[in-house]
Length: 328
Image 1: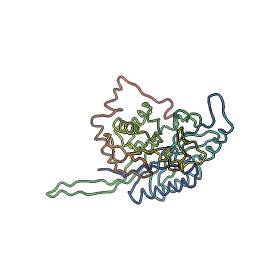
Image 2: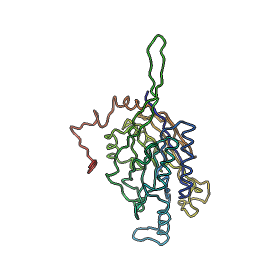
Image 3: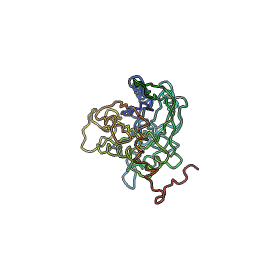
Image 4: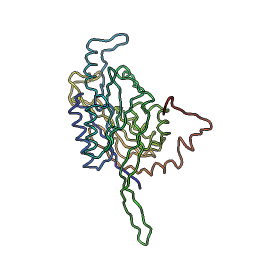
């Protein structure tokens, strides 16, 4: 068995404030490493910078308000550049704990914000970022659109415990640590409903499909399980769990809601799913926390025995698929 230990962190941004959010990230990474032995930890969408649940930014169709522009200014100030001293700090956390990190970040470049996900390798630091292709609903007002320049998978190096069985009169098992390369992708929230994007990741050979999100609906579980079965890959879905106390006091709380520091804004639902759609951990609801599971990478090939959607099940003699400009 060629395996590694992977975790998802279910947590909220600390009131759009960078320093306490980075402190929380460091604390959770240490916990995942020391308690569970995690080698990979995935954090939610918009963990750095924050997800502005219920905000309108003063933008009814055809006009913008002064107050909305001030809210936008505060939100822009909470975002970070990639790279930046903040990403250097995250890279240092990855190095100090020897953990590969996948982190949802609100990225700023000039006057535009992007909903991004960044990959941090323990020895190399920041190795890749990608930007959400299609912001959903009102997100289109506040975030720019990604493009084909950020559609690469990431090849990550881990040390795997490989179990071998010696067939003798008394069978014995031996565990040997050896380096293994795993192929990771990052698909942000409702990008997971883009079938062509999913197919693109499958064609790149994704093995660990990371899904940072803020979608806390119970129906999200069926989406994650479907993707795992469809792509014959491990799916790591990290969702925020956020309460009103995790936001600035001026944050809108939604229609018919009552001001209550304990009131839930984003309900969680993080989970880890195996290549045959089996739930390995979670879903976690109603609290912050860390979920960890052992990923047996051989399970991917066991699953592709009867379903390989970009191989024997693709029918390339009938269907064609391509990504404009990819790889150029």
